[in-house]
Image 1 (cartoon, rainbow, N blue to C red):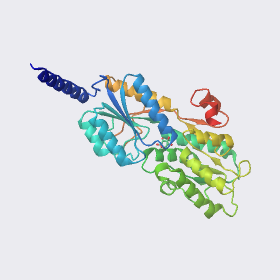
Image 2: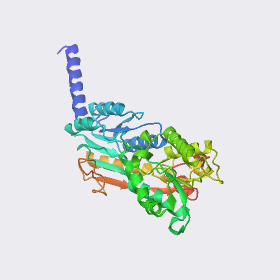
Image 3: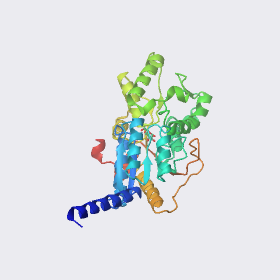
Image 4: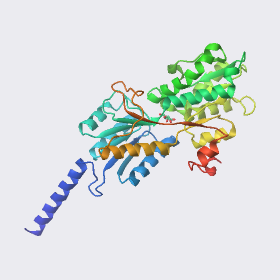
Length: 360
Ligand code: BGC
């Protein structure tokens, strides 16, 4: 054979070899199995942590990782997942923006025998969601409700009445209803008994939900409620906030309206233990947050990925709760905890999640 012909044959062979590996979910050059990780946004601290934990732990386990953030844009997330499929990812780990928007692209993945793990947020109305790993979302709400119950001493409040306002998360996020229901189930008996009084009267999920979990929208909604119902000096004792991005907006609104820590600043709940919020907890502008150790969730998901790739049984601990409209998705639920100014050191600093300087 002439040299040019030999080179051509060699090139064709390499290309063929590479495409076979890609089809098998392996990166042609490294020979490693490739995993796609789709995260919703870089704009909230927790998803950055989730993304980098997942990437580091998957690499440590010997996989190639295609990590993408979708800027809270469902259409962009679809394009990114399409790319992961084309690039030969063997397993997709997806924290969705709109849990119901991914049906067609997930169907493509299923056709290609790619397994899908819903990360933190359930993928809705699809039969192409193999597993779900999250924190116990109902328990998150329960802990928030119980925090309010114990801090105000509701069980022994007698004739005392406390004024409450409630918020809920994004309606396109299946978690949001679980958080709200968990908290509401604890608070409802006290609302019914009149111990908790919702001055605005707003209790329906649709009325109190904040699309996109946006801080600014929560702030604007709190501004509205303060001027409509509290401008006359009516006391506000407590605000149920499902997470930290909303709690930040609510605290900003209260501060702008002249509420003062140690004087009339209400109890505010939260979730995620974001740095900005833990600083607010230390400053008295938020009372608690839910600690969901993203390292635990990443560990669990990496275990799931390994089991899938190795054809072993995937560990789950819940096969009843998460109905996505088409099927009940086998789930692994991690355990959330609450953090406040009394236990944050042990929980967040001693565990190496943050340094003191992070919260200074
Ligand atoms: C997550 C929360 C987060 C919220 C906003 C939810 O799906 O479970 O931890 O605060 O989304 O990003």
